[in-house]
Length: 186
Image (cartoon, rainbow, N blue to C red):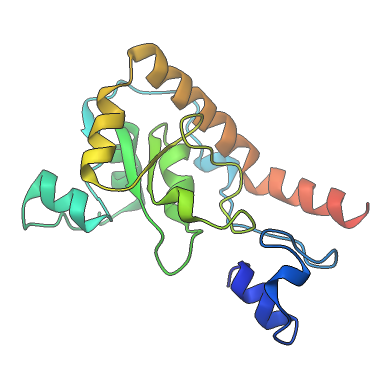
């Protein structure tokens, strides 16, 4: 499902990871990732009425904000997207793997991705191009997240938001296909 130093080791008949380097790939292995259709990317930023999107997948953050009651996911995609569009921040984490559509949905709806333990993601694993403090916020726990958010000025927030939108534009399905084709014919 994902490329990591461990999968590289496994793919190559249990050769030592150091044979290829911790974050390098053999030349015939190309990383891929999720993408999102351009039509799902917001064209206009909305006024942010609340700090966090309702659905929070980090149990620690959800419990601190909502207590023991976890918010249920939305019944429709449009309700989910509307909630993200009116939220400053969307919380995401590693789930079954490092890459999941949730990261792309948060950015596509004009919220800033708050990604738990982003610093632990292997460089070769998607999502590619997320940079803590530049186009998202990486955090380790609730206190760290709240501290980082409290330090953001309006100008800092806007810069993060615009960089996030730039990242998601480059992560659209069309752009991903262009990149794959370009890299294939190199």
